[in-house]
Amino acid sequence: MTRNLSATLYFVLLIVIVVGVDLLFFRHRFTERLIANIGIVLVFAAFYFRFLKNP
Image 1: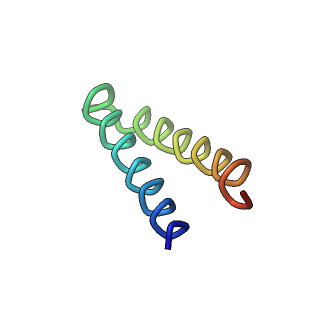
Image 2: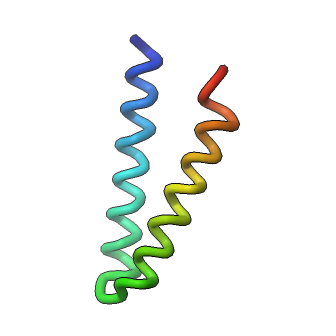
């Protein structure tokens, strides 16, 4: 149960950070927003596979 909860919280944190960065910094810049979102997702994926996948 805690594994599902931690994965859900991790995913919610990812969404909150992506939306926050979009609204604060890249509101009217599509290409920069797309590049930043891809970068954020890649960082979260690397962190997940390095630290959270097999604790």
